[in-house]
Image 1 (cartoon, helix red, strand yellow):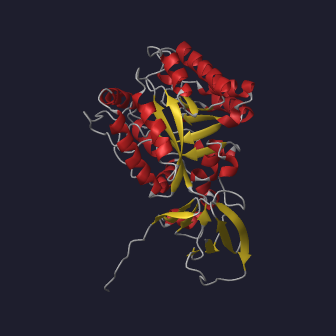
Image 2 (tube, rainbow, N blue to C red):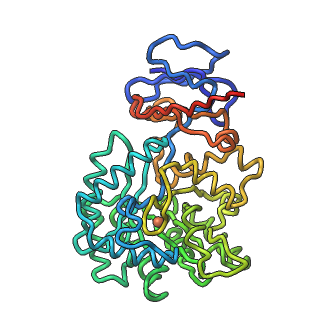
Image 3 (cartoon, helix red, strand yellow):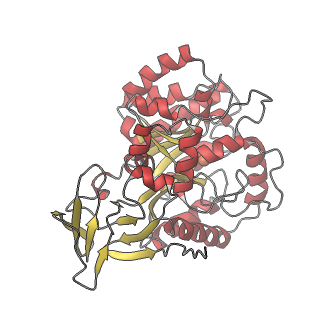
Amino acid sequence: MNIINARLRGKAGLFRIELQGDRIAAIEPQADVVAGSAVDDLDAQQNLVVPPFVEPHIHLDATLTAGEPKWNMSGTLFEGIERWAERKAITTHDDIKTRAKKTIGMLVDHGIQHVRTHVDVTDPKLTALKAMVEVRDEVRDLVDLQIVAFPQEGIESYANGRALMTEAVAMGADVVGGIPHFENTRDQGVSSVKFLMELAERTGCLVDVHCDETDDPQSRFLEVLAEEARVRGMGARVTASHTTAMGSYDNAYCSKLFRLLKMSGINFVSCPTESIHLQGRFDTYPKRRGLTRVAEIDRAGMNVCFGQDSIVDPWYPLGNGNILRILEAGLHICHMLGYEDLQRCLDLITDNSARTLNLGERYGIEAGRPANLLLLSAADDYEMVRSQGHALVSVRHGKVLMRRTPAQIERFA
Ligand code: FE2
């Protein structure tokens, strides 16, 4: 299969991309627009061809459960955790698999082929983890799935929390998670981070911690995570998700913190729609946005990307799998609608996210890499966001996985 009349981000002109089997065989410049010559030519129509979108942070075990058995009436993160504990008590293996696969279908429909899902392991039976390990195998033709062993109710604060984390890794979790701001005490938060970093280092897992997901400016576990990563030389393999407290830190502390963050080399995920919904809930006015400092992290040369976090669950009632919706909202919320940000905004849902997931040479439009790519509906990043564009075709392992027909509009005057 060949893709013709393609634009590539950061390069002038048009390109022909030759696919052979499940690999990109060659990328050649085109002198001019060409007509398709073979039945299997895909015409990009002078629009962008990019590697697949990445979902770096979602909870597939909880999706599509909002209101079951009760709605989150306060809209806070902490009531969400309470509501989820009730729903978790009645989940079954099949229930989790069915909802996760339905959600993965929604992600695939929007051009996502790489997913990192957090899976709640604060459950003596590890029901969700067992289900998601099976799902990971069963959806290989659709997405590459990374599973995070996520201690929703804490590691130190939950009965046998450490043993459950260790067992989850032994059962096949790819990534070690954490939630230090939810532990009962500051000391437990610190010891949970040290425990999970040691577990990851010992087992070769990646790390992705729900870190300081609160408006509390005294929640300062990010410095602990970053220092653990720096000392162990693991920064590139470590991600701090949310870090919303950073939106409430004073600038003097944040200036010192950024020095450590840069030295550590860790990655950041922000979930802007989820955070602006859950945070700021204890404020009257002025009301905080409740997000981490996305633009400042990016300007400082550190790696940051956007995720959806939830689709119709106790924490967030909306969502449809479209990461471009998150990108547009995030650019607004983070004051990133400047010209230069718009020129490269797709980084936040493609290359930056791939780096967070440590995808390495399994990702990117380059000869020799996997034939996984998207044909988009616009010619550049700016126009893609402005026009609320879509992934029109998703190619995976050299075959068309999804094709979207844009809405047709008829005008009569
Ligand atoms: Fe999350």
